[in-house]
Length: 151
Image (cartoon, rainbow, N blue to C red; front, side):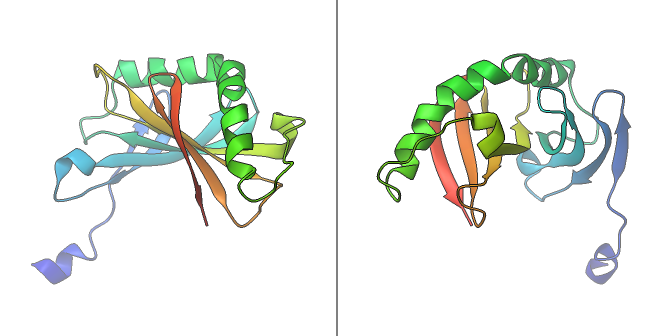
């Protein structure tokens, strides 16, 4: 039976809000999530969604939260710009962001299971300043908590 599980088709759902999503299944069901792509309205760019959930589908709270991210995008940028500058200064002493929206491209938003008392989520960016790394900002609610550079 184990060998045949390798050839199982990955389940997909069609969500009325996020569109077509692929379900990523783990033995530990708390790690299950959906992935898909769609337009992020503030930038007009296609980004990746990573949305925690199970095959029963997504919650209205997750959709509302994603809309809140879109509606708060300029405020989010204002909060994370000094943090990203500080992190970059570890490599480039006089680093400065002049125009965030031209220098950084949002590539992914990760949305947790909701409702939840404390919302822990993240967003990821590519940047013209270092094409070999992706920057991920972790949030608790709408306050940035940490930044990581992956690459």
